[in-house]
Structures are given as C-alpha cells and as structure tokens.
Length: 62
Image 1 (cartoon, helix red, strand yellow):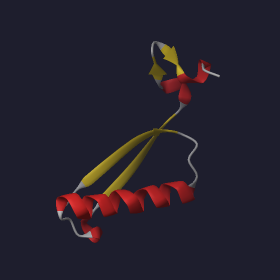
Image 2: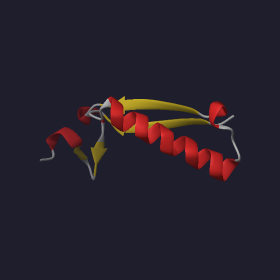
Image 3: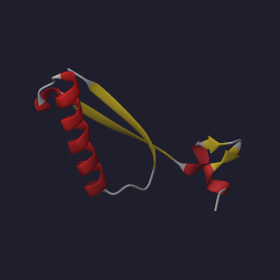
C-alpha cells in the first residue's frame, strides 16, 4: 500500500490536485502494481515564505 507525500508551494486549486492525484495513482498502479484503492496521496503545502531556492526565499522572487 503506497503512501505518497507531495510537497508543493501553496496555490494549486482543487481541480489541479484532483488531476495530479489521479495521475500519481495511475503511475503507482503501473509501476508498483498497486491497486488504485490502495494508493494514498497526501498533499503538504508550503508558503512561499517557508521555502528558499538558491539562498533566496521564494516570496522574494518576482
């Protein structure tokens, strides 16, 4: 039973999350042999102020 955690910047709408969860589930089914009802996808949102790239907070990028 795969548990998949997705870390992402906040701002994705519910439709985007639904489609992403469907595609991740299909991938787990194809590559791991998991049944769709066994796949768990957890979304963890991060604020742009909680994430840095190349030493700069994402909220400071234009």
